[in-house]
Structure formats: C-alpha cells, structure tokens
Image (cartoon, rainbow, N blue to C red):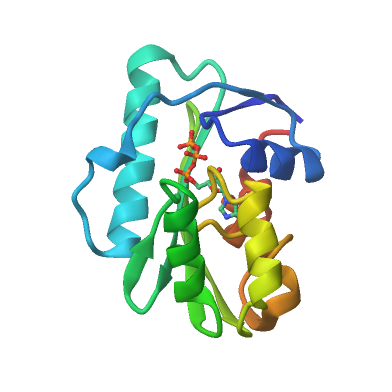
Amino acid sequence: MQTIVLGSSSITRAELLTKFGVPFIQRDPGFDEESLRIADPAHFVYHATKGKMQSYLETYDLEMPVLCADTVVTANGQILRKAKDKADAKRILEAQSGNTVSILSCMIYKSKTIELIDLSTTDYLFLPFEPKALHDYLESDEWKGKAGACMVEGFCKSYIKEVVGLESTAMGLSVEKLLPFLPL
Ligand SMILES: Nc1nc2c(ncn2[C@H]2C[C@H](O)[C@@H](COP(=O)(O)OP(=O)(O)OP(=O)(O)O)O2)c(=O)[nH]1
C-alpha cells in the first residue's frame, strides 16, 4: 500500500492508521481551529478539517496523498472541545456522565486523483461515571489533548451502555471508511 501523509499531530490518529496497517508519515497541518467561531458541531468539524487541509496545501504538494481530520464531542447540544485544565476536564466529563454523547469526526483525504470527505458520528449512552474512577482519571492527565477529555477505549469504555457507530470515529479517524480509497 502506498505511503500517505497524516496531516495531523494526533497520536491517536497515528495509532489508528498503524492498527489498520496503513503506511504513513506524519506532518502537522499548521491550522488553529480555535480561530473558528462556529456553534454547530457538524459545521465546526467540517470547517476545521477544511482549514487543516488548506493550511497543509499552502506548504506541501500532493506528491503524496494527504489525510486531515477533526473531532468534537457534543452533549446537551454543546460542543465539548479539548479541556483547558483539570477543572475544565472535570466539567466536560461531568456533562457526559450518565448522558447521551455524540462524537463527530470529519476527515478529508486528497490525492492527485480523488478527494474523499467523510463526516461520521458515533453516539454513546454512558452510565454515570463512578466518582473515584473519575477522580483517578483526572489525576492521570490521560484526558489531555483529547476532544471532550474522552477516551472511549479507556476511561469511558466501562460506562458504555449503548453505542451506535464506529469506535474509530469516536477516537478521531473513521479508518474503515477510508480503506477502500487508499492506493495499493
Ligand atoms: N485516545 C483517544 N483519543 C481521542 C478520543 N477522542 C478524541 N481523541 C483525540 C483525537 C485527536 O487527537 C483529538 C481531537 O482533537 P483534534 O481533532 O483537534 O486533533 P488534534 O489537535 O489532536 O490533532 P490535529 O489538529 O489533527 O493536528 O482527540 C478517544 O476516545 N480516545
């Protein structure tokens, strides 16, 4: 399979591509989505991903196909971004505890011949987070750099009562939807 560029600084996205056997190099797309003032979650992740792709293409060409993505968590109609600090992480996680949570991931894959745009959602119904476990997770700092301070494969896993959608979407990259388009 041809090597692609993961236009993302995300460790999780790199781990997902590795898990699915996709050869890649990683480059930071150099876009700050904090500059966006968009309240609708789907519009936000789309424009954030478009911004990352546009920023990447200002610096690099398409000799290698490139993949950019963005992810947000929503609960009670609010966008829950990356926590600023431990107190913010506590607030964000408490908004998800015992609640229905939607995680939206947009990805744009662009080569010389095709452009794929995918926006997928994974919905969770979480049981209430156990206070001691939540405290220990907050102390672990594992929530840092993660949309909604959430780790569906980690802290949140044991609280999943219902799920609809791909785990990879919830982790930040719907790899299964990308695989059919990757060059052999
Ligand atoms: N391990 C793990 N990571 C998650 C989960 N949900 C979201 N993430 C990560 C994936 C991304 O790295 C991050 C979402 O933030 P962004 O979409 O802004 O990406 P990030 O700033 O990390 O990298 P990028 O903007 O692509 O350079 O949160 C999860 O359930 N588990």
